[in-house]
Length: 310
Image (cartoon, rainbow, N blue to C red; front, side, top):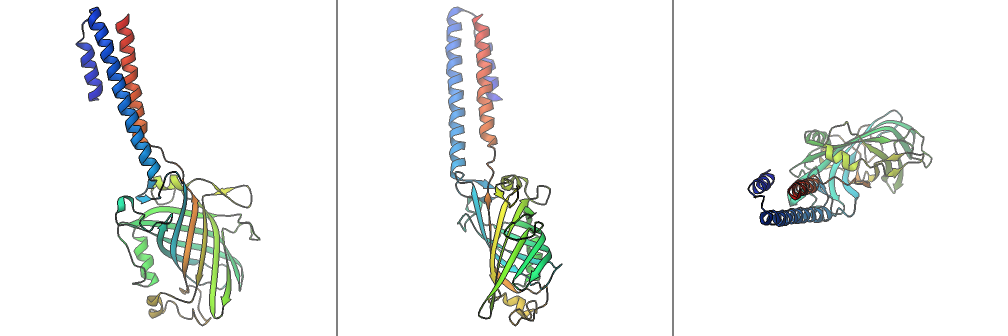
């Protein structure tokens, strides 16, 4: 606003003599050029910052020139032994696009999640599907060691954090899975160790708890399903019952997990989960505002010049 006021004052003080008209036009042109140069320079700086880092929701995803994302996370998950059951899972995000220092500005923060996989079906000793799934991602400005307390306590700790993103299951997995399945898993043995592998598709829940800018960034519809649709995120996981949370074992929350006698709901698995997808480029409000400012000033000066010339 000060810039517009200054230009208006300058024009009001100019006389109508030919010399002053020419001088006025010269001054107008210099002012316009300087304004546009400043706007272009600012846009260049904003563009350079954008090219160097993609930051949303307090998380640095690395170069904005590479809009793919990969989050690796720890995982603890409960045991199921039949159809119509729900498995719970939680963990901490270890890396974002390969970096374990993913907090914007190099600060201290962390991403954590709680997942629920519901309505198990087509259960056998080595295979299971789930028809509903929700992953709730949370943000905190501190780091939490999830191995210092048991899983019940960890769930409460994570769910008290700030909601960051909500994902819901997407069906049509293909590969022999039922059309209504959004997640499936397989199991096998290595000696006496039970290994598990899971995979599924997820959509951003725009209406769910979280940060609007994060939901917009993840909502890309770039992961093709086995029909004609597109999901936003692919999940893969691997886990086993070999090393468990010692606090779960001490609290009786992992009873029978290593002997084959566990009940449904026991915290029998530890492992890793990966989330993959593409990020949606976000608008640059600062640079767009500068463009508007530069063009607005140029338009005012141009109109004033035409008026003076008449």
